[in-house]
Length: 177
Image (cartoon, rainbow, N blue to C red; front, side):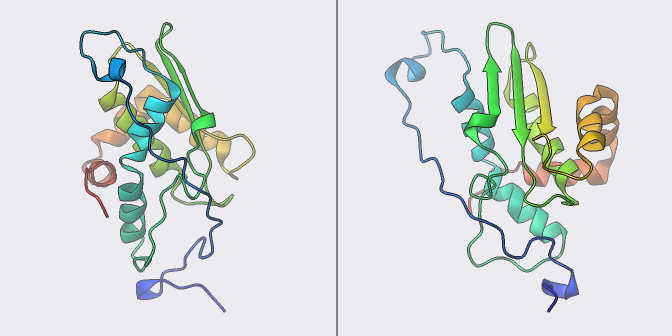
C-alpha cells in the first residue's frame, strides 16, 4: 500500500520516529539584563531555530501538497535538529549546525538547510561565520547538499530566486500552530 497525501502526492516518510522535546529553557536574570554581556551559546541558537521549526514543517508539508498531519511534529521531535549538534564559539564568532533529514533520500534537505542558514544569518550579528550541514552519513546526497549550503555565492544566488525566497520566508514566518 502506497502512502499518499492529499492530491495523491507520495509521502516520503509517512511513519517518522518521534523523539521527546528538550523542554523550555527559562532565561536567567543576567540573560534578561541588557547591561550584562551575554555570550551566544549552543542553547540560544537551538532556541532561535525551535521558534520556527513547526512553521518550517507545516510549510514543507503544504509545499509538497501533502495532507496536514493531525499532530504536527517539530523537527526537534523528528530529530532533524538537536542541541548536541549545535556548536557555538562566541569569542571566535562561529556557529555550526548539523541537521539530520528523517530519511536518506529526503528531497527537502537543501530547503531545510537553507532555511536554517537564513534564519541564523538574519538573527545573529554579522561577525558570525555560520556553517550549516547535514549530519555525516545520514543523507544520500550529503556531499552535494553540504557543498551548496557552504558556498556563499550559491546561497546568495538561491536567495535571488524570488520563488525560493518566498518559500524560505514562509518557512521562517513567526506563527504558531
